[in-house]
Image (cartoon, rainbow, N blue to C red; front, top):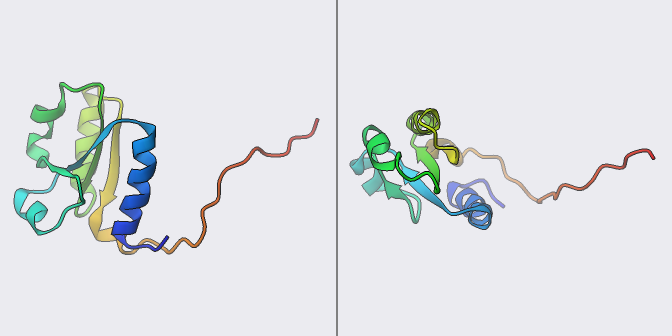
Length: 114
């Protein structure tokens, strides 16, 4: 898996979809969203997040933005309002800086003395 944002996104989304029903939310402004956004993402600017999302307790929300600050604020605000399944995917600007991963390692049980 290479470190570009498209590959990172596909990997994360593949694991997220198996875990729960979630919605990917881009909290940038509409102009930023129009220039570039992740496939399947819905644009809800940060100043509208609370009004538009606080009623849906059963869904999981995954936020992202350009620098990670707005997505962090969105996640923290909704967690304070009682939504438990809220995640911050972070900064699009940093995803291309992600180190290359050449292999996936699956967790296994540690050998414990009897």
